[in-house]
Image 1 (spheres, rainbow, N blue to C red):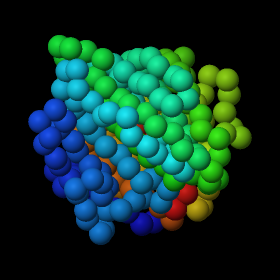
Image 2 (cartoon, helix red, strand yellow):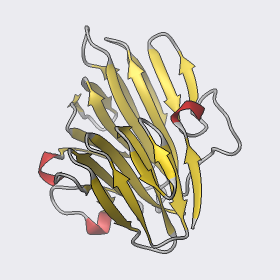
Image 3 (cartoon, helix red, strand yellow):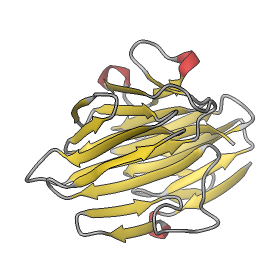
Length: 237
């Protein structure tokens, strides 16, 4: 087994006034040659956006982009004609493919917006751009990790999918739990981030927003404390 530890305190940070950003990997003005990506995972930004502010229209191509609101609403508009708000409990997926432009703003004039934005390298280039948004409550089971974004070939009608052999899992634990995460392919690794709470795995104790990347293993045991939320990304290495 190989592992990289990513303490929350070592992330890149930026204060743009309207945006407080935490970068798990090199992004914008933050560059660390040892933190470019984890396998197919290129970006995991932990952003707080001021009321009424956001990212104006800008382009993307050949990237799978997943947005997870944590609190507040994301007001989305794109060049494919989609316009609406993404709320906590919902997830947004865009396949940028041959090219899209979009904007993302805080839908509230009073409260900050907190969200994760995650970029995954696709396994197919220049696909037709696409947008999807779903509520994930029906997918979540208590005290386990539930798949919420999966490869296109594995998706059910309730699940979001991406152009990559990668899966996103979300877990909400209200009691102490020992969980075995089984990695589905020897060429994959798993990136675990503690959204809130605490866990222990592979002799490492992780708290809020700490993360660990593990690969060249078939499975790992995770001892999860009560009142913990966990994001797990299983990606090709």
